[in-house]
Amino acid sequence: MKVVTGVIGNDIHVVANRLMDLSLNARGYEVFNLGVNTYLEEFFDAVVETGAEILLISSLNGEAEGWGREVKLLKAKYKTLDNLTMMIGGNLTVGSGNAEDIVPRYKNYGFDLVCHQVDLNTGLDMLENYIQEHKQA
Amino acid sequence: MRDANGSSNEKLLIDIGSTYFKVSTKESIEQHFRDFNKQILDDLMHKCSDTVQRFESNDIHICSSANGGLSTLIIGLTHSYSLKYATNIAYNAGINVIESIIFQDIEDYSIPSDLIDVVIIVGGIDSNGGQFDERLDNYIAKLNYSNIVYVGNGPDAMAIASRVDKLLVLPNVIDDRLHIVETHLKEYLTNLYQQDIEGKEDIKDLYKITGNQIYSTPYVVNKSLPEINATFAVTDPFILLDIGGATTDVHYSKDLVRDNIVTEQGHDRIVFKKLGVFKSRESLIFTAEQNEFAYELLMHLKVTESIYKENSDRATKVIMQLAIFLVLCEMSHYRAANVTLKLLAMNSIVFTGGITKVLNVADIEDVVAFFYRKILNSDHKPACVVDTNYDIWTIGAKEYALCQ
Image 1 (cartoon, each protein chain N blue to C red):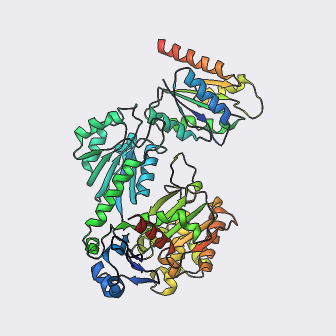
Image 2: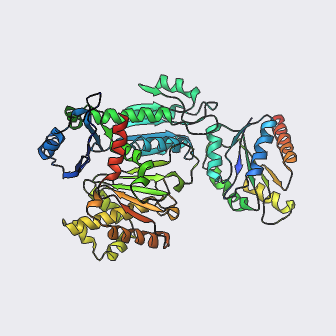
């Protein structure tokens, strides 16, 4: 499966991005890594150009919060993204925060899978389970 | 002194613009206002025959921007990749982009009435076929164009070629990592531009005096950019504004754009086809009238809008200052044209073209400072370098002459 990934907004956390790339490749995904400092429109545009089934956005220290609010509005402008699986992970708020508040908020922004302060492999396991469930459905 | 090929060391460099032509020898540089009632060659020989006749045809090198460039309409899948890549390649090949169309919304776009020199279709990596359906054919069928080229994903190429007459298929400009592949489209567009220049009757005539290929002026200028530090006190990143009679060319350091395009080229180009101080004066004034700050600039320059109707040295000077202001606006967040430059990070602005014969450094610095204060709310002051002797063009032309 094709995955577009990258770090959203004005965020240069390249180590996490590189680990994500390696882990996704190791799990057999075809990875299109847009790197750090990526804007939301570039993520959606990359999905269109590559035909990716999954968009996996990472973020640190709450940078995604502001961008997340734009997701539904921007995604609605694209006519071919209805079946896209959208996942976000990292530290999704400023400071620590708790998952009970943060996960529903990001799901409301339009993400199917939200991993707040979840380790990488656990997050990717969640993705695989989600894909399996949706294949069966 | 002649070499083994019968060529002397000294070269005669000629640049044919829309308003002026320039003739450069080792000793001097001449500039002449064009006589539009005469063919270019007749006009050139009338004004500079002594100079031209001193040189062998192999030692005469000519470039021209007098044809106004070619126009393209690009149909792509997204702004961030296919359209952006094709637009970047087109501008760097000297082609003017008149319309960019997102394929998913193609039915919402109007059909340009003018003849389009080349239509470019682009989009998708090679493993992502099935992007273009009959809506593309319907749109293309209504267009009036001379050439059409497909540089999108591989699987769609055959299908589109079977439906669209005379479609040229070139390799995809997007590779499997979503990176740009410039070579093939750039070469194709460059050759098309070249053929257009050579095809113009006026320009064709010039081959009577030169044994070398006639190039487009933007190429020649672009060629000089890596060498610019040797002649001028220019600090990177910089932009070069070539404000001419019909169009304005901007060559900019790639450090000034937030870009996902990775190429070896250090400078890109953008052209504003309707911003010029002579042939395009009317459209420049129209643009000024749409700009809410232009009126304030006129006040700052202590003139009123009636200056637009004047035909005086003072009016020419103000129009040129206005051109600088409008071009900077077009490249800032204020107007957000095709390219938005990080103007606060810019260290130098180099000015070349006809404006350097009319404006002095103080006139230019005044309008640049006004732009930074009004539009960017900043006291940032990039160094203004004025190429009064057309050195930029001669450096580039010599580079080409050496290559030939």
